Image (cartoon, rainbow, N blue to C red; front, side, top):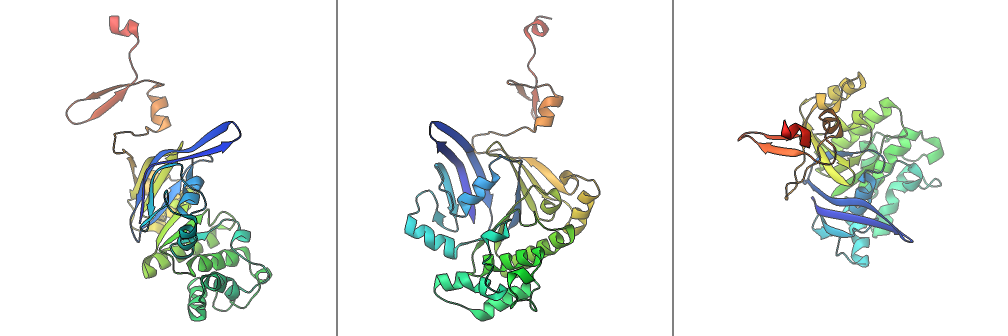
Length: 296
């Protein structure tokens, strides 16, 4: 569904250039539900905006559902955003029109696409647990209910890919669990590919695969170890780490580049250089010896 190779994004402001993505590689299978995590400034939101057609990549390759987003024309981009990708924002104001009912909000993208399917709009609101609230205006809905309307809006044009940017960032733990349950249900029943950007490790623990981004590159992947994802989320709430519920892997790209976790480098006292040896089974990375140590 998604294939990024050597993806680069450079933002320019006057004489200053900021490289947000520095050759990122990422593959996401059709029907997969996965999360992207990273610190502020790591490049995760930039990646999401590129996948959503909101930003253009500077270089590299990025293909989504058969669309080449590096070469796509402006008129094709409109069609891509209407038919291929749906978006759920953390800020409800970017998803919802306050003077419309929940049902009318879900129907709005259909209207822009030229065909309103009221039965499907109602079905979506039932899926997100708002069967009895679909005719309410937004001020009559709680924050969690508004976010569930936003999910229904993101699905209204039957996209192949749903992108969610911190979808539970402004709701409580119970509502967060409910929203993740909705994502898992639509992923299973519709087969839609879902990519969630989050800094919440509890949320990340509830998907099969997590990709960590650091300094504009994919650094680590975590694959599900615990089949009970709800229990995995609770384990993290009780003080566990993502490694306790997922198996961690370092990502190696096609030319052999990898990012060694900073805590490993600090523990081994490795700075700008390192020595590397292959003993026939393992690759061993160590801090280089000083000239004095070599003489001895």
